[in-house]
Image (cartoon, rainbow, N blue to C red; front, top):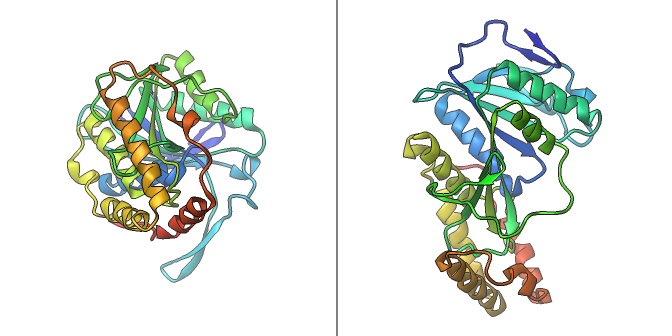
Amino acid sequence: MRIGEFELLDSMPELRNPHIIATLTPWIDAGSVGSLSVERLERFMGAEDLGGLVKPGRYFDFTRYRPVMYYEDGKRQMRIPNADLRWAKGPNDHDFIFLHMLEPHSNSEEYVDALVEVIQHLKVQRFCRIGAMYDAVPHTRPLLIMGTLNGQPMENYEGIQGNRRRPYQGPTSIMNLVSERLGQSDIDHMMLMCRLPHYVELEADFAGRTQMLKVICSLYDLPSEYHISRRDTQQYDRVTAEMEKNPQVKSLVARLEADYDARRQRRNPGDGKESADTLPPLPPSVEEFLGELTSLNDGEGN
């Protein structure tokens, strides 16, 4: 079934008040937290294909997003990058649609129009985009999830930090227009963003994935098995072991811990200057140490 620039299943499932959980690659997906979280939800919930763009090459440069060759039943297949839609039944009164958005390289406005059109056609009740960014936070404390709902900070939600430290100004993604357009159509738009330690840049940050899934499971009353994982603690334990060998990094982390604890205790997070403004440039030995930490990623696991 053709809906604008998307091709959906001819025999569509009957979706109950669907909520979309979306990721945006590569923008704001530090540590692949958003991608890893959606992939795990799809696996545990038995998600099935729903559709994708008819001609993804109209929007994406395949020298930047490379097609992938693989074998299935002994036959060679090619997976072409796309804005894939998948769906799964939810345990309560609504179902889930998982949307894997890619940033466009051309015809961006048409791409945004196509996404908004298919989302409206599916009668989506809420559009939730998840991801992660690097920040001046320690890996030795629980990772924080920033959340907004319809542009307003989310307060009194388990595991979510609603207050913003300061409004962001700077480069952004054209894909933010999707949320704005949906808001004009009276569709709830939510954003959940995990704050990862800026001194540890892992290709796959499983601690971030676990924290994101904890919040999603709490919001949607999903089973705890969706977020339970050994990989997250093992990964950061290895970071701690390496940190113990470098006194300068230990000192940096101690300062981040003190700042983190003070902010958590303060009722008004707007008091005082931001820690990122007061931290001096890292010494060369620390920069070298941080570069070595990027090799700690082992890929996908439990």
